[in-house]
Length: 366
Ligand SMILES: [Zn+2]
Image 1 (cartoon, rainbow, N blue to C red):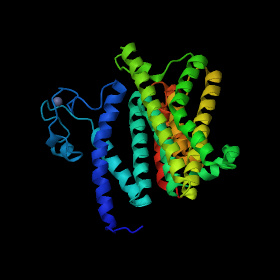
Image 2: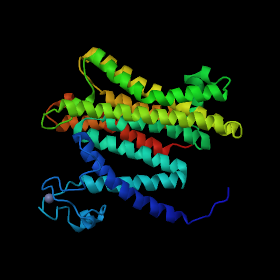
Image 3: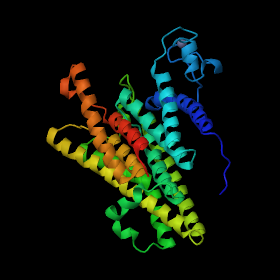
């Protein structure tokens, strides 16, 4: 493949602009999804006076500086979280470009980083990891690992699989791979749904959206319908990905046996990583619940680690769990000493896992 060569700084510049724009969109996601609002309409408006924000007052980072962090209409202080999210997204995108170069891998790593950022900020503010993000993100992580496997860019899963699901690696025929792979994609949403159901049986606790409204008001019907929309939406997407995978296997495997083999291993490795990451947190959580009698970690943390495990593979999972626990001890101690509840202060574990995932993503070599 011949490629034109652009100066590397061009990509770095592009990544920073792209990061600022995506970071601005992430602010909308972080602000609206936990409140059950649409991320499309209405357009940007001041949370205090509801006045629409014009295009020139909505430039990432720059507008915040020019308006000195205030709303043009009502002069109220705009939270500094907004420019912070924009800046941190841009910095992460630059770091990913520096690490992975201009590639598909960098593109997919940027999406993964956005998922982690959204979960970190929502968990910090609301102690919540919304299904509306975790369900589709899990499907994305499985598909991304498959694509990266096929491109030969990603080797994290290949070693894991021989440990986690050794039987599947023996004698791969295209038909079997099409069926098993398709089954795994189709299972992403129902798998999470089963976790939700199991929670109801084991902990007598329904899905996390019940904590959504800050004022303590609950619109059960709206919550239920959003939950259903998330499940069905992810299920349909999963079936489409499964069909695409089966088609790709039958179409590509005769000519590109190696790429097909690597893609399939990527998917199996991702499934193994998800099982490992999600499974470990799930057991920890269950044991903690039966010993202490209350939830130390939420089901959102389990789903988050399934996503991380799928994208970063089994080694990445261990790295994130170790680093996340260390960050957890530090953050937990700070919260305990600053808060009134001492060591009973709830720790947003998703924040720690998310920060750890971003660090592992950036330092991982393949
Ligand atoms: Zn205002």
